[in-house]
Image (cartoon, rainbow, N blue to C red; front, top):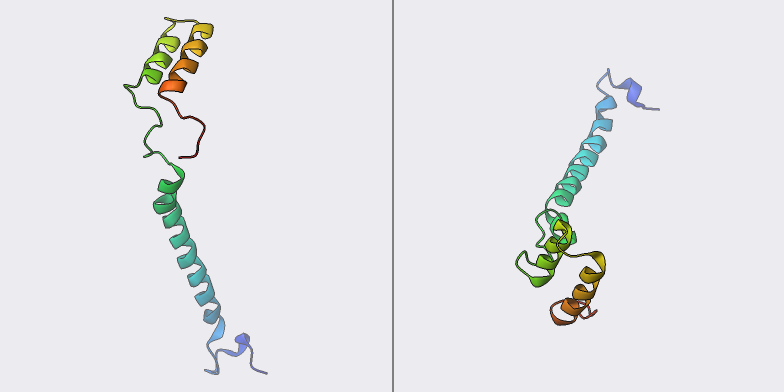
Amino acid sequence: MQTLANFGDGGGPGPWILLFPVIWVLVIGGGIALLRRTVWRGRRGGPGRRPTVGNDSPIAMLGRRFASGDIDEDEYWRRLSVLNEEFGHKGGVG
């Protein structure tokens, strides 16, 4: 019976044959890691994603006024509900 231990007499590839599956696993794993860091991240909305509300939109301005303390929480929510009806999403997809 020929085993990997009998590689010294030139009768087989020896234990180096086990290195090829390891190389393929590393190549496939590296390809998947590269795709996850570049292509697939853009679809999920990674760091390069555009914000859903523009910086000069009325909703963003209202958020800045609330954050700076110009308006209180009740006024913020009241105005936000009005702005969402006019400028925000109506609950639909897209």
